[in-house]
Length: 134
Image 1: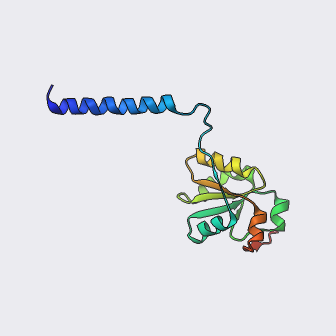
Image 2: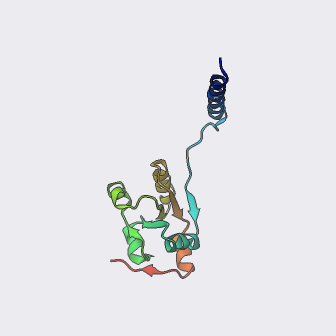
Image 3: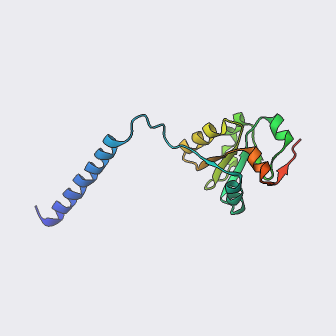
């Protein structure tokens, strides 16, 4: 065999070895990507830089009491139906009461960047803008 064929063969064998080791050494029981909790100030920075969309998926009774200003209010059960309305290429940050981490994880598995606001109470404590909804 000439030199070029040996180089190609060596590259292919090397690539297969890397893939095989990766599969063999990958942690078992890995549940996939996990969303990141973000503080209210981190979320505000992302919104100011137009790098994210904040989506309030809390119960409507909670939303009526106040919601982060500028947040999209979407009932969590309707979120899949509104997927085409959400901008692609921006991080989806969920404001939630507990289900948001799982909601964010679901979107991560759909190849979307997603995170969740640690706490709406933190948002209010930082004196960030709150909108009253009806």
